[in-house]
Image (cartoon, rainbow, N blue to C red):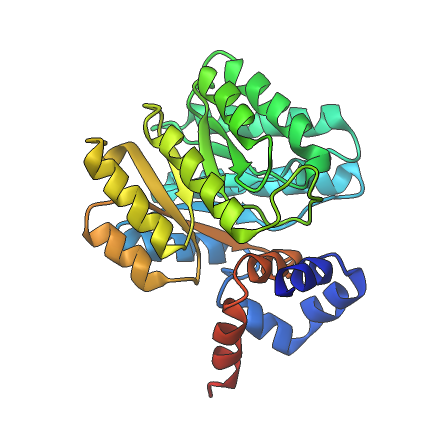
Length: 308
């Protein structure tokens, strides 16, 4: 019930306009979003690096409506990559194709992302671009483009995909990505999808996550396991130990502002850890989808709002 409610709220433009302009909305988001500017994201990334975790930085936004917005979004990511290089951060970037103009002009979106991957591959050491997954209308377009990008000479290992375990097609998609040696971030999924294409029960989503997780961990390719679920994390650690999978051959991934204690504990125990750091003014859909994934965060936010 709560999951469906927050997904519906994430799609409300009127509530989004109110929330993103209100003081209480900005205060609510501040725990989970690292400010609105590149400097905010860079400062937060440096702090996370200090306790031993890597980061993936995402400029929040999606479904831009014109080429100028898409080009501005790409330029901001170029600036971000410059800052990562200049400050020698353990950081990469995550982006959405619709933020690069996929709904406006598919060829433009591809051109802009190719430019960002080219910059990432030219860095020393080479950097990495994660192409985020969006709703099911974009799944095949996104995966096709990731495959195409990864095959460009020099790009191998520098561009990756995201797979959502609630999708029925997830295992088949993983098989194709692994065949091309593409790095994957595995998550559960945070969009409203019909039962014809997506698991609806949490137990089914979790079960498929664990199944896919084990495939990734044994693949010999460096992947990210995006979860805050302690039961799944324990299962991943136990599986790695049983199968003699080195701790530096995969990483756990968690969201900025959620379970910092768990993030730091994994680092102390020698497990790979990456924190997903979002920034920007368009935080409302992101926050609502995070609440849909984990409704327990509602109480966490409420407690923070009541603090002096």
